[in-house]
Image (tube, rainbow, N blue to C red; front, side):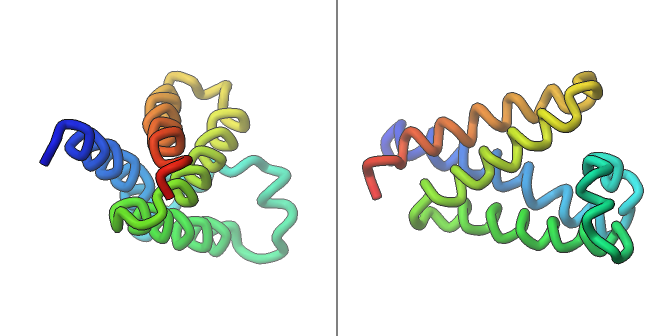
Length: 119
């Protein structure tokens, strides 16, 4: 395996882990994660906010597994980037907690740029 493929695999594993872990963790401790949703988003849904959290978690797992699959990486990497931009923008006052999301965003963008023309 050449260096570029190894780097690509490491980026995919890193971004996928960052998307799959919170979704699984939210099942066991939803209140550790629910606070990252902006209040206006929670207000849009008439049901329990934990349902919104778990629906979001399902999409995170799908994105993570799709990135891990190695198939058409541009699409899930672009979606991951959009998710991360939203998380960063709506939680910027918590920069001491979400600063890692900026690094993960850059990893996802690296996948976007790497796979933009190759698919």
